[in-house]
Length: 241
Image 1 (cartoon, helix red, strand yellow):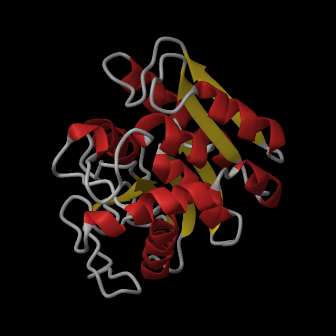
Image 2: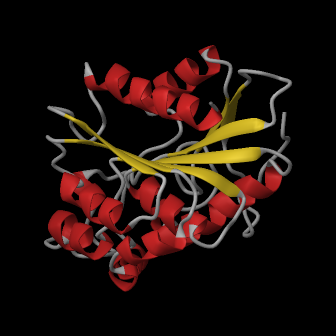
């Protein structure tokens, strides 16, 4: 549909396109979180549900993740903000809603605060306090020697930790976002606390909506998957009404 997509480093970005309506110039772009990829089950489920509603979707893997080219060690938030820009370049002419999960949520906030091509923004358990996340999850791991969550396929790089620390938080970017903004977060998220979404929601301009899913974890497991999907579908429907 969109041909080959490469970032500014020349790395090919793997993506899947769900054609909900070939006549429509509206599209939802889905970005994943750290150690994830475009094929996370809840992202696939969300894409299929949106497609069934007649909504076009492009889900992609950031460079260094999934089947995209590049090194995992180089996959920082700052680099992924550029990756997202390359995806937006490839779908020029569409009205874009970006939905990011976890670290992909922080990527969306940073991109949307400076890129008017994102007309609607969704954060799914979105990371806000990046420095706090780095210290909380990986503070006892030696960068360039240890791994994220003991996964040998996900080495922890100093570039990643330095970037999270330098960004510190994306909460201050909320005031620079003037597009409709949806945040969905579970009360049982033990990776990105719900307080992240509450903090940026308070600072965000309208129109904005925060959907709290009782009992939902970070990846919207089990019954939380359809609840998250319905929240997204209902919100998008309101934007078009």
